[in-house]
Amino acid sequence: MSTLRALARAQAVASGRAQPVATVRHLHLSERPLVVVPLALAGEANAPLAAIVGAAPDEARLLVVPQPRNRDQRFAFAAELAAIVLPYLDEFRDLTEAVPVDRGRDVRHRYADAPQLLVPNPAGITFLRLFGRSTRFRRTDGDYPVHQSVPMLGRWLTFFAERAEQPGSSALLALTEALTLHWATGQSTVEDLHLPAVLGWLDPPAGLTGAEAAARAEDPAHCPPAGPATDPDFDNRRLAPAIEAYTRAGDDPVARAAAYDELVGLLRDQLAPTWELMWRGVGLLRTLPAGARVAGRWAGDRDAFTAHAEHVDAGGGPQPRRDGAVAAALRLQRLERASTAWAVQRAYDDPLVMAEHRLAGEAFVGEVTLADPARVDDSGKRPVLRPRIQVVTTEPVPMPVGARLFSPQRPAQKATVVFVTPGADGKTEVVLELSGGMGRGLTAPPGSVPEVGERICLTSLSDVFLPGGAFPAPEETPWTHGGPPGTAAAPQDPAPAEDWS
Image 1 (cartoon, one colour):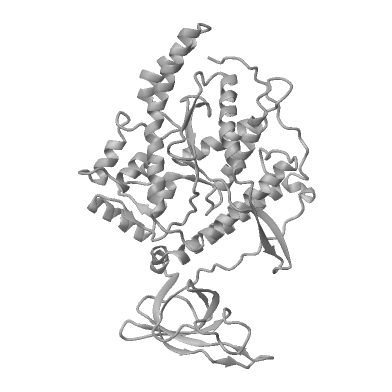
Image 2: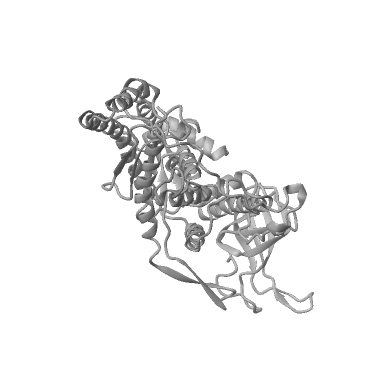
C-alpha cells in the first residue's frame, strides 16, 4: 500500500466517508454493461444455485437451479444463461470500423464496440472462469449431450475471464475492485471485497458514518452477501429446507410448483439487494470523467473481442485446459507488459496517482526558469534540434546525469538530464536536453518546448512501446519444456446424467 493510499484510509476513518484517490476514471464503462450476480451452493465445487442477469436496472432476469447437485439442472441453467449472454454479445457484432496499420498503407477491421460484463467481486470472476471451464468442453451429441449453446457460452466466459487477468482491461470487471481503485475506504483490503460494505463507505445513508454503514451492511439479516458464497445461517435455516422440500415433492406437480415458487422467492430476496448495489456502484463510477488513455485500452479489448469472434466463426476449437510452454511464456510476457503500461498510463492520466510516484522518487514537479528552444546540436553528421531547459524544483531529484525522463504533458518527448545542481535554499536546478516530439526540422513548433514559467512534471516512467521477445514456434518447443504440443482430444464427460442428491 502506498503512503498516499494509507493516508487516504486514515482520512476516511477520521471523516467517516471514503476518500478519492483518483481524479479520473481509469476504466471503461459501457452504456449497456451486462451485470451478472451469481450464487453458488456451499460445499459443492462451482455448483450454480442462482443468478440475476441483465443489461439495465429494469431488465433483471432471475435464473434458479432448484437442485444444484443435479447435473441436468446445472446444464439447463447454463443453457438459460447462454440464452441471455450470447444474444447480448451479438449486439456488438453489427458495426465495424477500419483501423490503419503499417503506417497507413493498409487497414484492418474490428468491431466498433465490445461487450462488458460486471460482477460484484473477484470471487464472481473466479465463478465465471470455473463455470466456463466446466462447460466449454461439453458435447452436444453422443452420451450425455448438452444444449448446443452451452459449450459456446463456456468459451466466451473463458475469454472474459482471461481478459480479466489483463491489467487495464475493462471487458470483465469486479465492481469492488473498480470502486476501490478510485476511492479509499476506512477498512482493510479484505473487507473491501464485500460490496455492501464498500458502498457503505462511499455512499452511507443519512445519519450514518461510513464505518456504521459498513458494519450494518455486513449483517446478513440486513444485507445478504454479494455472492457467489451465501451466508451459512441462511444456508442451514432457509435454503436447505427449501431444496429438500423441492426434492421431496418428486413428481407431484402441485407440490413441486409450490416448492419451486418458494425457492425462487427465497433466492430473489437474496439477490435483489446486490442487484441494486451493482447499479448504484456503476452510477458512482460514471460521476468520474474517463482518463485520456482509457479509450486506448478499450480499443485493446475491442481487438481481443474481434479476434476471438473471428476464431469462433472460423470453427476454431475451445481454449486449452493448460497452455503449452510457448503460449504460457507469451501470456506471461503479455501480462507483464500490460502491467507496466497500466501503471504508467494511470500515472500519466491522473495527478493523484502520479503523486504516489513523486513520493517514491520516480517523478518530480518543477518550474521552467530558462529555455533555449532554438538550440541545435551540430556535433554529429548532421545538425539536429536539441533544445535545453532548466527546471527548478523543491522535490528530491534522485535521477542521475544521463537519465531519460518523460513528461505526461508531452509523452512523445524525451528529456535527458544534463546537470543536477542542489541549491542552498532547498531548491534543485535540473538542466535537461530535449529530443523528439518537435518534428523533423531545426525549428521547434510552438508549444512543443516548455516555456519559461510553465510547471511540468518529469518522471522516469515511460509510456513508449515495449517490443515483444523472441520465442520459438509452438512446434519447435524444446524437449526440456514438454516438446511440441500434442493433439489430444477434448476430454469426455464420464458422469451420468443423474440426480446426485
